[in-house]
Image (cartoon, rainbow, N blue to C red; front, side, top):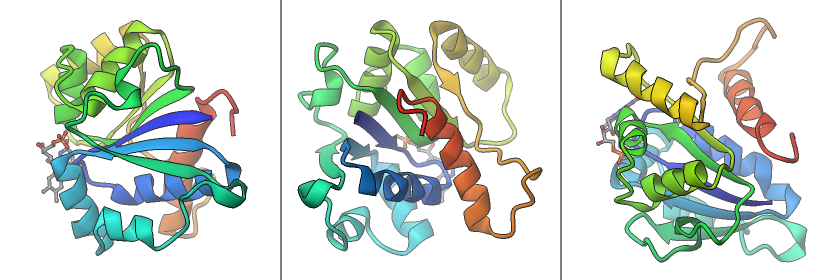
Length: 186
Ligand SMILES: Cc1cc2nc3c(=O)[nH]c(=O)nc-3n(C[C@H](O)[C@H](O)[C@H](O)COP(=O)(O)O)c2cc1C
């Protein structure tokens, strides 16, 4: 698969890390971009800069594993920005209220808000793992507008019915949900 993955400044960088780890063995092309606050929260919560974390393992795509193409969030020339370059899914994990609101308003001013706009107009899978609580009326209105436009609003809200034994189990619950919306239905 070819996936566009946006990582924003909402809490829950661990969800993004796990998503990438889960996709790693399967030979996908992962176009990844982080907002400024996505980078800052990643480092704050995971104790390592995203770029250094990337360098720690092989993301070259050789030997059949997934390839990460790391884009600047300011680069609107990057592939996910183009409607004609088809992606199998557009994922924002985790998704801040700011980025969700920007996509709802069609504010395509960085690579994530732009690829959100592209996914909606081209009718391709767009999954927004919103992490904010509580939600005020405007958040809820924007969620409704996005759901009506075809986005999947996926609050970072793991279930407890599978009897999680660890934080990793809770994180995997959410990552499984994200993956279930992709064509491979992984
Ligand atoms: C440590 C930290 C945790 C944050 N957690 C959240 C959060 O869970 N949800 C959220 O919507 N914003 C959160 N924010 C605020 C966003 O980072 C902020 O609104 C930022 O402008 C989002 O920009 P972005 O959407 O471009 O990443 C957090 C900020 C910090 C510093």
